[in-house]
Picture 1 (cartoon, helix red, strand yellow):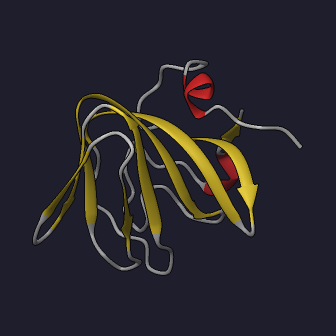
Picture 2 (tube, rainbow, N blue to C red):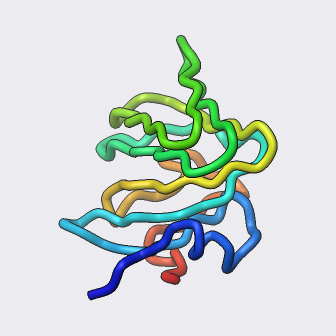
Length: 121
């Protein structure tokens, strides 16, 4: 058992849109990621996804609205809801989602990483 400093973990890599697993609990992964620019539109058929913004500015675009996050705020995207994260500048985020969640949901994209291929740091 050990404590985790998400910002210290983020300082160990620079890639954007490549989440890294920093913890697991109850079948969920806790991930950290750097975001910059726009991600791909996607949805998760059965998994909810929590975005907790640590630093920067992040919008979660939904087809009918945009949720703007400042550091210290989070938003849960319910399963089945199409969404696209958009970072204004560079943003750092903590993510919670079921361990089997594919990062781009049903969309195939250059950003796609299968859940089993996620790096643990």
